[in-house]
Length: 257
Length: 257
Image (tube, rainbow over all chains, first blue to last red):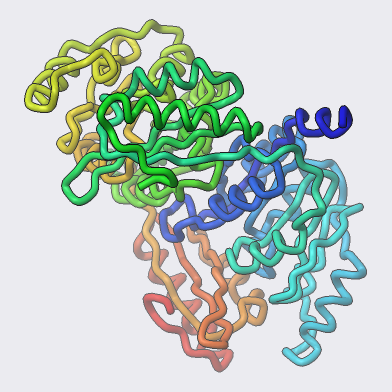
């Protein structure tokens, strides 16, 4: 029981680097931040920071070395395809100070995958290159695997392939107690209940309340998201906030608006 | 003419900090990265890096001080509302080493806006607080203005309000020659034309080619995005790539697939 509590108290953190000029140019709308964030929540790992960087080695090296040092896990998406603009593996190897090698199992996977698709060309063989000492992350969609090196998880940029790699990793990373959350919606301007929100958070240790306003159907509303690792504290904080809204003549909507 | 060329040659860069636990938790799908990226392209400013950070002062301070120093412009979204979790102004003031003050014009705007909406409460007055010495960015939707301090542009997190602030800033920032781009699509696996892409980029100085694969309707395809600040070089590179695809028995599709 003590061990369980100790494990629950340890917070595991992750960072994500989205690598790709196409995101920074606005051409492609990123879908991997939300996807990785949601997946990490389920694993009991907190996403602390995301960086979107260009397809440039110095930018990747800086982000990798900063973020891998201060998080339990570092994920990257993008830049592991067969073309000249896919430089993630080389950049991460440079960040780690290791060489790049062809991973035998990755090569075998690609040989098999491309056996009926024109064969393993030099360009395709690029997708078997890994920072020396890496393991593979399975990709059941298009063969070319993701890569794990230490606490770094190197994944594809195409969201459906990223999803498959996350699925392959599900349950394999040590996490802590998941951060639980409940949402209470209300047709109210958030500024009208700012004091209530602040007081409720202050009097409920271990809980955070986020306020997310919206304008819809010509009306002003907000969703209040209450977060805690402790289900009892979370429930108490939610109840207090709902009671406070009701006392002020408002109608709290469990689950949010 | 010389002056014009010198101005065109200067590259203006920007960074963006998206501030908000709701993005890192996966609850909210960010829309501001793509919106700001697209807007910056039109202004002739290159978005070099994006960071998504939590509603935590140390994280905001670190990102602000790193990114404002190495870019011409720094934009932030999120955390400037009336509630306790809106800490962007205080965090940026801390990063700058200046105090926080109520901006008289912001106060006047809010007094006017809330005159028919219940009056300017203490919570609402929070939205008039700025790092000392700041100017305002108009918000024609909900009163509460954005903030400019030096090269930092502090904007709202709600995408429709961010859009209004960007609109207000349109044409006011000095930019360089916009990075032009053309897209050529092709029903081909990118690995089959990797050599062509690499060679075409190599022989066309001042042009970059990005390769973005997709799987659609049971087929493999890719879009090749060619970028350059020089329209003539861009056209030449596009023509060469299209000719190369055609020579290889492929059908290039101008504008992309």
